[in-house]
Length: 79
Image (cartoon, rainbow, N blue to C red; front, side, top):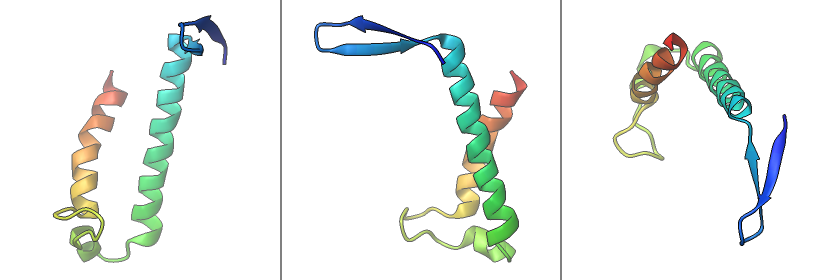
């Protein structure tokens, strides 16, 4: 991954190539999908676990999170 360093008056800022940023975003997205699949395939044993209320996010559940996030990934991989 290449980067260009330029002075902005507040220190050095690295600007990466747009292709590098796109590749990093794709790599991150694939990693997050892999983590989601791991949760679904290895850790959730019953359907009711998808609707179990979150202790960390009031009103949330694993199922709500996956249902909310999935359209973004569908869109990402369709373009």
